[in-house]
Structures are given as structure tokens and as C-alpha cells.
Image (cartoon, rainbow, N blue to C red; front, side, top):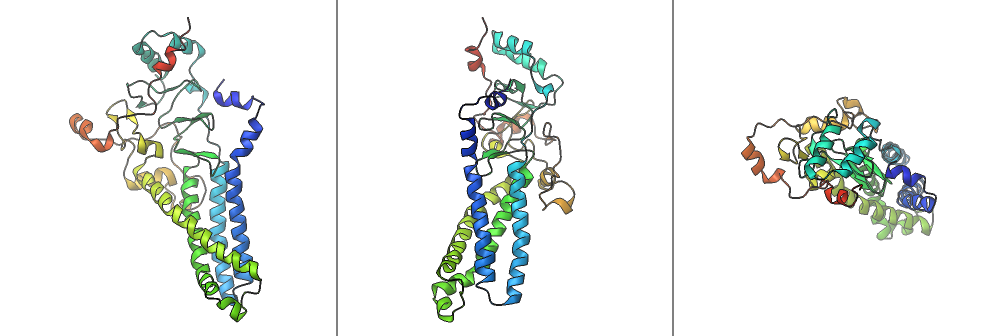
Length: 341
């Protein structure tokens, strides 16, 4: 039984911990709901006098808002997926693995278990990657998430703001969520800027244009500040993930290069070129690129790799694609304490 399954059957404190994990999501949802009220009611309905301006602002706002919330919803509620049972190591082989007297013997057992599986990634010492919590052979680009308690396909990172792992199944939704969140904040900030400036110059009160009272002024004031603050923070995050998409890397791979059975550690091992990398996440149907509808290529278990023409010397000498540490170091030290007598 995996660590994830054990956590589900543990009654003590599980409900409280699960509820706490939803606090960031509830916070984001509350901010979105408040911003909707502040923009639609306080700004567009009560503050703007021009009917044409009201209609134009509201139409574009609702288009962006729907795409923004739709992307966020899919990012939050798309399951991370599970590794199929054929990747699980049989109990008999687990016992042999724990009884192994040497690292080479452990490597041979894992190679035998992965003989029919499409795995090219290895640990630092060249062994097949193995999760001793889930008792499975790890697919390429798969990592164990301690928060989710399971192995996650093409794991990018665990994001508390969506209470979910950003991974193969929802990465397109996550990138669109960042993009539409940035567009939403910029649109709100720019369209409320005029009224924010007029408020500070006291033209609102003098001309009697703000009919919603004092609280309306502060809704518009904070709406501008909050949207601007989020926009500034989202620029770098969205730009970074666009960079990762075009390089075909995950956040984990950007910090710890994947190690391949042939060629060793290489950050560019999955880099197929910018457009091909983009298509791997967003698909080849341009009509679906900017809609939060699943269109990514692949099955999450195997990935096309870059075909290198470099010789072995240049490959090993490329400092940009090398790294000194690897996350999935073969767990021989953990096995050492778990050897069955």
C-alpha cells in the first residue's frame, strides 16, 4: 500500500490538515469575488457615467474573467493522475531489493523490473529511479510529492495556491491561469487608473460623480492597488514558466538536470526546439491553445528526446547542461537500514 493510500485511511487529523490546505485557495477565490464586486458594481455601475464605456468595460472584463476563473478551476481540480500498476514492483522483488548485499545487485534488480518499461532517466549512480514509498519504478520526469503523498507525472512543483501539484495533467491550465491572471490584473488596473487618479485629486467628491458613498471610493482605491500588486508579482512568474515551456523543462529540472542512461545529466535532454516544445504542452490545434481545454501531447510516461550530434567529450564538458547534484540519488543508505534479516 502506498503512502498516499495509508494517509487516506488514517482518521486522526486528516480532515483538519485537508481543510488547512484549502485556505490559500479560499483566499484567492475571495479576492476574485471581491474584485468582481468592486469592478462591476462600484466602478462600472456606480462610478462610470458613460453607458458606452460601461458596456465596453464590462464585456471585455467578463471575457477575461471567465477565461481566468476557468483556467484556475481546471488547475485546482484536475487530478494529478496515478502511475499504473505495471510500474509497481512486485513484493517478491521488493524483498530481494531490500536483501541485496551490494549496490550493483540492487541496480540489477531494478533494471530487471524496468526491462519492459520506457524509462531513460537514471539516478546519479546510473540506477533506474525507484520510489521506496510508492514501491514503483519512476517514469521519466516523475517525482514523489510529499504533500500529495504520491508519485506525480512530470511534476513541476506543488503549488499551495491551487492546493495541487502542477504536473503533466494540468500544466497547460496552470500556464494559462498565470497568463489570464496577469491579463485580468492589468486590465483592471488600467481601466480603473483614471478613476483612481481622480479620487486622489478629490475630483470625485467635488463633481459628485461617486454616488456610492465613501466605501465606494475605498473599493476603487484598493481595487487598483491590489490589481497592480498582483500584476507585478505575476509578470516574473508567468515569464519564467513561458521560458520553461520553450525550453521543455520543469521547475525541478531547471534546478536539477535530469540524468539520462546515455549522455548523463542534461538540462536540454527534452528540448525539441521552441515550437515543438510549445506544442508538447499546448498541442497542435491553434484553436485550443488559449482555451483551458486539455490538448497536450503524450501520455505522461514517455517523452521524445533531443537527438544530439555532439561527441561524448563536448557533451560531458558542457557546463550549462551539467549539474553536481540530483534529487533522486539511489537510496542505498535508506535500504541499508531496511534490509530484511
